[in-house]
Length: 214
Image 1: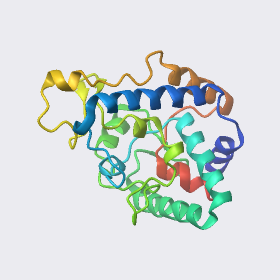
Image 2: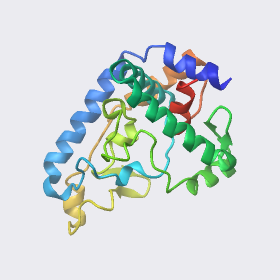
Image 3: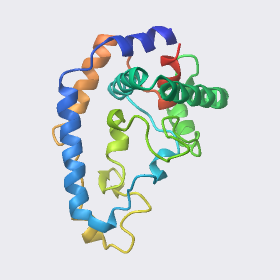
Image 4: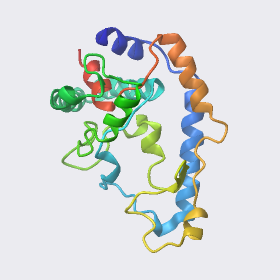
């Protein structure tokens, strides 16, 4: 089943709207970055957002696998190092995985969600190059990675990276708010992906990338 899921994600084309989604989010990030100026500490080699697992949806997974497939053609050895790191992460994390460790799909129950909050918070992303501190699949990174750093509104208010906006007032932070996807295009594209693959749910980067190596 895990192999079929990986093949399905690899074989199908992402919805045409994903390119538009990436452009919208990247433009919003650029605008927020210009408004934030030096308050935004994000720089190449800063890995604050690359440690600790987070859920990715089927659209994120397909984008990552497309990026990995391209890298395999350009630099097979580098791609295999990513897969090797992902497999090592899966081996470390399987025993406590809050879902199905065979498929890598996260559980949807309240208990699974509670366990996920405490799960692998110190685990580095397998796509992070440990030598350079750079993302190896940067152009194909998930939406969570694209929106980390600037102020983004959540149920608890405006959330920012703890390294950013040092000394800024609440008003100054609010003035730099990033509205990543105002029309919620991502949700519609994810629904389309899940209908096509018949695999609803979320996973994490390690499982997504590790399964691509089979």
